[in-house]
Amino acid sequence: MSDSVLLKQRLLNINADSFESLALDVFQFQYEYNKIYRKYVDLLKINIKSVKKMEEIPFLPIQFFKSHKVSTVDAPELKIYESSGTTGSVTSKHYVYDEDFYFAVAKRIFEERYGALPQYNILALLPNYLERSNSSLVAMVNYFMKFSGPDSGFYLDDFSMLHEKVKYLKGKKERFILWGVTFALMDFSETFPMSLDENIVLETGGMKGRKKEMVRGEVHELLCHNFKIRSVHAEYGMTELFSQAYSQGDGLYSEPFSMKILLRELNDPFSYVAVGKRGGVNVIDLANIDSCSFIATQDLGLKHNDETFEILGRFDDSDVRGCNLMAG
Image (cartoon, rainbow, N blue to C red):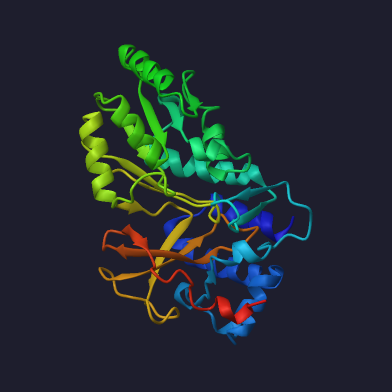
């Protein structure tokens, strides 16, 4: 049995006390088998034998998913997940060798947060994702629909059809999740304002220049007003991550079993801030066995004593220091 298979099995059987131990073993594994990550660690002149804590693990700047093939597997990929981007822009690519594992992790994360999928119908309003054939979000939601209610489905831009489905489900008193990209949820709520009762609105981010940029609080206030709901849920995920974090209101995300968030100093990417202070978001995603589990994102965050965290925005200077080590 290969090392990667054993690591995946350990992740699916993990408990809170074994996270750090598994993270350190994944680090050693990825240093050995991920050529790009090993080169980056070597250029930092880090002695891997001296890495004894999670905070000592080096985090790969997320931009490498745009410029390099970040992979521990020396074999053809099953498929490639790709980020959205403006015309002509360079997109991030996540090479997928074990989609079943991605789905197993994603389903467990969701059900630990929300309960069993069959109790919900999923109404997915994801137009800019559906327009691409290689979206990790669409693949995940499509997989979830295999277990969710029979009235689940995707909606591109037919708000009238979605409105009729919502009315139908409300009439039957069937639970549903309206899962959508931010700008589309806003457009739908403005076109068909209505009460969604106790059902869930889950936004997955994404304005992409389609509407005037608004802060999260403004977006959620508008959606709460138009849908007559108390809170808006949110997902924190991205092409480069196989794990997702969910917020059930107020922008407070909970770490799932496979993920930890560390916040680095803004002016020193190799030091960390105290709880309650802003910092750059480093993500340990142990589901990324086949790529890289240690990623320095371009997001700005805040972590609380109860292990919840907030995403406050992105760095004004989007170049995370460290990328220049491997320019060219």
